[in-house]
Image (cartoon, rainbow, N blue to C red; front, side):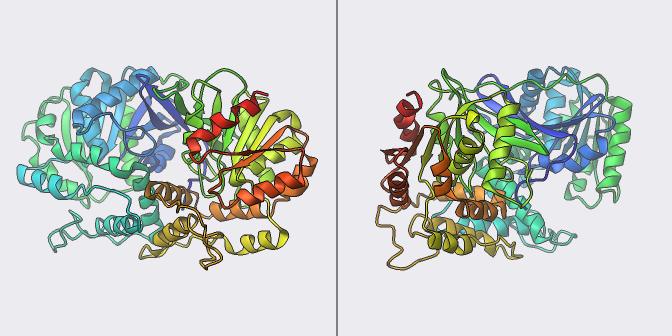
Length: 566
C-alpha cells in the first residue's frame, strides 16, 4: 500500500519532450533495449515483474503513457491513438534510441500498434498482447459509457464511486453492464490490490480518459492490415480481448502473425515474451539523459540516495539554491505553488520525503526528524549541493532545523512557516490522536474516512476535536481540489503519514531552536491555527525573526526572499 519499495536495478527517470512536458519512465537491465507499454489507467509500475524477468538480458525501458502515472498529458483535448504512437517516437528521440523491440499490454498494445504502424523503420518487433479490435456498435457503446468523467466532489463521493468502479470492472466487462454474458471468470482481487489500483487511477485523474478513449476509437483490424514491421498479435484465453483475435484480417502482412497464448499468465507469459525478444531485440541503449525545464520553468527529476530514489521538483534561477520542504501527509505537489513562484528568481528544489509522494521508502517505519534530515542531506549530495537555504512548512520545517543544528554548514538561512511548537501536554495528545492507521476495507470505507479527516483539518483544530472549542474561526479552508490533493498524497504515503506526524509531534522543537545558530525566520498566515504557536516560538526564542505571511501560498516565497537575500 502506498509508495512502492525500491527494487534493485530499477531506476526511475524523467525526460523532457520539446520543452513543453515530461515523460516519466522506469529503466532496468543491460543489453538490447526493449520498450514496455502498460495498460490504462495504470503506469509503468505494472511492468515491474516483467522488467525483473527481462533485465538480465535486455535494457528495459517502460514509460508512463501521457496522462497516466507521472507523465504529463498531451496538450490535446481529444487525442487519437496516432498521437500516442508519435509520442513514443518523440520519447525515443529524446533518449537517443533509433530502433527498438516493443511489448504492449491492452492499451499499451494499441499504443505499440500505432507506433509500429506510423514508424515501422523504428521497430524490430511489436508484441501486442490484448489489442482492442472493436466493431462500430461496441465502439459507440464504450465511448458513450465507459469513460465517466472523474471530478472530485466536496463530500468525497468520487472516491467511493472510484472504488466501486474499479471493483466492478473485475466482475463484468464492460463494467457498467452487469450481465451473465459479461461476467468475468476470475475472483475479485484482494482489497490491497484494489487499493493500489485506486492510487494508480488517482495519479491520472480525469486524464485517464485520453489513452482509453484513443484505444476505443482505434480501428485495430485496419491498423494490423497496414502494418509494415514485424508484429505478433496475441492474447491469453482468459483475457476478454482474446475474442478480438478472430476479427483480424484473414491474410496478414508479411512478418505479422497471430498467437493464442492459451492459459498463459504471469511468469509463463514473461518467459514467452523473453524468447521472442531474444530473436529480435538488437542494438544498445544510450545512457539516460538529464531532464530540462518545461514552459513554466520547473521540471521533475530523481535523486539517488542510500536504498533508493527521492522524487524532486526543481526550478532554476540566480543565487543560492532553496530547498522547499513539505510536511506530513503531503508531497512536493502540495508545495508546488511555492516552488513555481520562484522560477527565474532562485534555483529551488522540493523533495518528497521517503515513503511520500513518488519517493521510495528508504527508511522503513522507524521515522524520525533526524532520519528525514539525513536523507535530505544525501539527496543534496547527489544533486551536487553542499549549502542551501531551507524553507519548510508545518512539520516540513523541522528537518531544516535539525540540519541547521547538527550540520550547520548545510544551511545558510532557515525559514519555518506554521511551525509546530506545542506545550508538552498538547504534543502528547496530538501524538496519540492526530493520526490513525490506514487499514484497507474490502468495501473501500477507508477512503471516505481519509477524506473526512483531511477536510476536517480545515474546520477544526485539532481536526479530531470536533467541538465548539475546536472551531477554526476563519473562513473555512476546505477547497475541494486542495482536499483531494491532500488525500491523494495521504493515500500514496500509506501509514508513513502517521509515522511522520508522530515524528513531528515528538520532536523537541523548542530545545533545537535554542541550539540553532543559523539566521532563522518564523512566519505564518493569520488563517492558520498554528499562527499563535509560531508567535509563541518567536517570543521564546527572540534570536529568530517573525513575519506574517500573505493569505495566498503562492505569495509566501516572494515575501520572504528579502530575508534569504539578507
